[in-house]
Image (cartoon, rainbow, N blue to C red; front, top):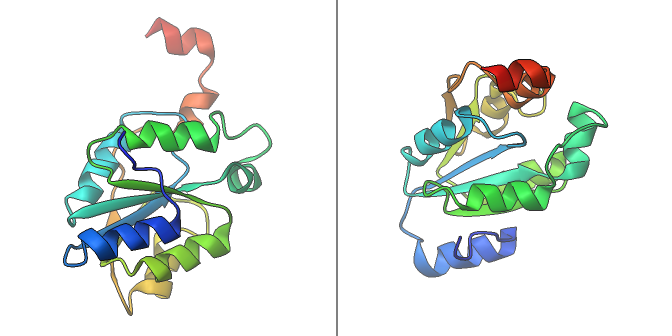
Length: 163
């Protein structure tokens, strides 16, 4: 895991000290219930540049968007889980939507990667392209799995364990 769990200030300092000439890629998400789409998406995002920084939506932001029963795993657990992926260089927490936008601007990333499957209006591909394509490349990745965390949660336990 090394020291991948960082704040915005820390990641900017680390990058300016060690990676100033590298292409920074940034992506965000909930990454709640792990499924095969997560490592595929992150590996594909990493291929777009040299350093992959992942912003995890806070527990409060997830509850606001997905409902009172989410997230299944706490932000701390989700951040730690992502830190074990070799494709992920840094993980930071995003408290609210304003922080998502502020982080994108302050990171001065070369590339923003978004998923075409994002349904949330604030983070959907068209919103991100409109807001950020004037000063960074915005790459939209297709679905990396036929299931998403919300789908997995909805599967009755008996059906899920019988497969």
